[in-house]
Length: 89
Image (cartoon, rainbow, N blue to C red; front, top):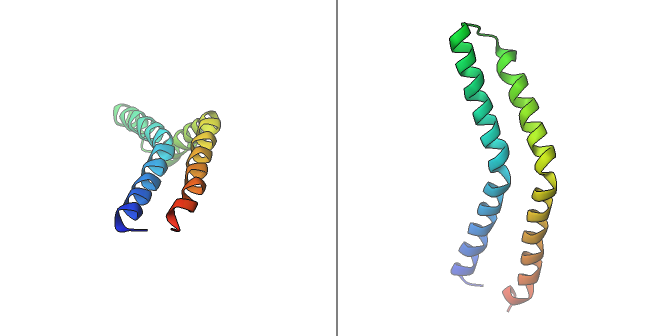
């Protein structure tokens, strides 16, 4: 195993992690911006008003995309297990 192989494996691992986390992070950011705009317009500065909608939306997003997340992670894991024989030589 040379340096190029290690870099490629690390790059793919980071890419898959980003791909799996991106939808939940994007929803959290969009909901957070929406709540912040609402708070700025209404001058309501309640902390639970920020946390609860974001938590609910992120959990709902994860539940909705869970099959896709599992499929992506399984494909990545199968590729990694398939590469084990070629990496040891």
